[in-house]
Structures are given as structure tokens and as C-alpha cells.
Image 1 (tube, rainbow, N blue to C red):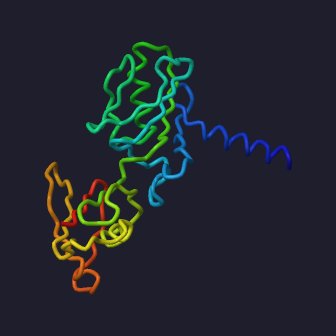
Image 2: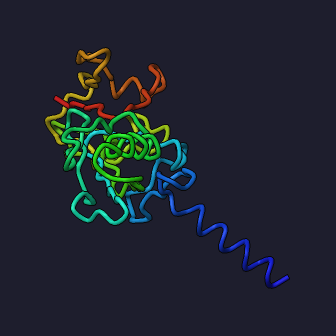
Image 3: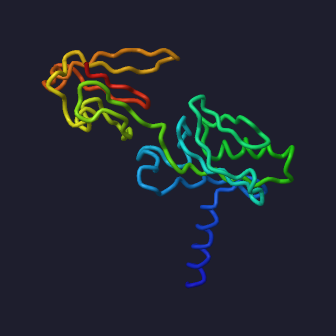
Amino acid sequence: MKRTALRMMVLILLLAAGTYGQQSSVSPPVSERPGSKPPADVSPADYKIGPQDILRIDVWKEPEISRSVPVRPDGKISLPLLNDVQAAGLTAVQLAKNIHDGLTRFVTSPQVTVIVTEINSRRVYCNGEVTRPGAMALLPDMTALQALSSCGGFTQFARVKDIYILRTEHGEQVQHPFNYKDVVKGRSPDMRLQPGDIIVVP
């Protein structure tokens, strides 16, 4: 029984390695640092990398290539030998495969690990006449009303009937009106937020 339990523990540790190369590919882990976990409704294997996320790229026995890199606003990262590599929209395993394929021209049988160490792309922003303007992490199913509550309330000059939410749709910024008084009274529905939304309180 003890040998069986030991074998199971070794198997679990091997599955957590997450390298891509000669070995089979499994989902790389996401950092356990507070605030860096994927949303509760997204598993580490399914999480899609986004702009401003921080990635740790490790290539076995290639310290000159291995490094921590930010995902630029254009969705790409910069690596030696490969220059610009598309990262946004891919999972860590998909990106590891792409880096592996690119490095085969320069490195024999590269083994690549990609770890998302900081998740910064799933954020929303609150600007204008609120007590604490700025960025905040987008929680699963977060609504505009919840986000406004996290901003500490309104200033005395806030025009709460004229609030609007800026959202990028099909490459264009669209303005969605949000009447705070109507929402809290139940006359209008609350609005579920998406990554990158900007709540503006005039």
C-alpha cells in the first residue's frame, strides 16, 4: 500500500512539470501567487494568455533563452532567436508548442515550459467621480454595480444617471449607458463586465 501511494505521488509530480518537447505535453501550472490565479470559471489548462500578463519561459539547458517576459499590448512577446512571438489568445501549452517549433531551427530537441506567473489582462477600470478610481481584477460574473461598489462610492459631483461603460467591440470602442439609480431600483438590468471594460462616472 505504501509503495502504491508513493507511485501515485510521483506520477502527480510528473504531470505538474508541464514541459513541451521530447516528453508528452501537459498543462503547465499557473503561479500560486495571490492575485495571479486564473478566474474561478477558467482552469489553468484553458486560460488564454492576454496583454500585460507576465510569462516565465524556460528552455531546458538554454539559460540565454529562458526568461520572464511581459505580453505586450499587441499580444506578442520577444525572445532571442525568435524575435516576436504571438502569445495573446493562446494557452500556455499552445504557446510552448509554438516556441518549441520555432526553436527547432536553432536548438536540438528543445524542451519548453511556459508558466503564467501574473495575470493582468483580466481587468476592468473605473474612472471619473469615484472615491478610488483605477484598475481592479475582473472576478467571475462581476457586474458594473459590483465594480462601482469596489471603487468606494461616488464623489459629491458624480452624475450617476449619466454613467457609461466603454467596451471594445470588433476593434471599435462602444459606449453603453448605465443609469445607476435605475439599476439599484430594479428598473434597468445590471451589466456584466468583460475584460478591458472602462466604467466612466462623469
